[in-house]
Image (cartoon, rainbow, N blue to C red; front, side):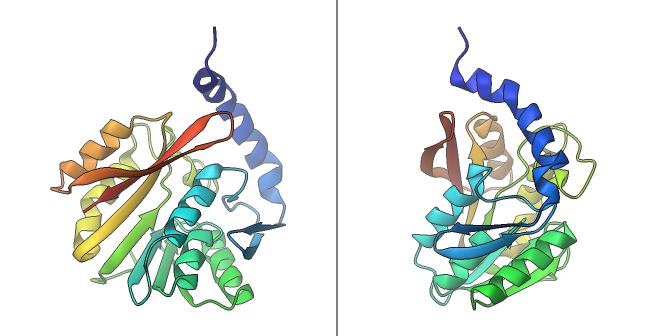
Length: 222
């Protein structure tokens, strides 16, 4: 008998290919956490894929007023905008230039301030440090073949997440929190170990079921 997890994993490549080949080519309007969003072609949609909306709700619940906040892999900008709405000073980066443009446009649409930058992980941040860092990483194993696919595929052995865990140390303020959201369909233990190898303490601070019984888990590294 097939479990929901096996069904999800079997359907995942089909659904992703369908979205990349059709839906991702259209500019669409949506609403998440009280924010009006335009999702540009080729940009990760915060409702079709539940990790962004789950992370956005979690970030909205944090006391962020006056804190410096970084979102890595900002996509539509929904998480960055939630942080700005909560009173944080927000920087957002993405390797996909269209995602950066999309985030900047959505910040303007919602009258929020976000410094949106085009870059690979921390490449455009210099020596900047942040009180809170959040990201929705590409947690599917595989090699991306386009900027749109870079939101999903993080290398055959999750090399992008491993590189993040290595580089993030140079960008955290004392006492900072680093939040990473993952699907329980991937090896969460492996990702936790990436951070522990860099002398972080890691805890699972939130879990939430979304679509077909999939559970999203948010890690906090300090």
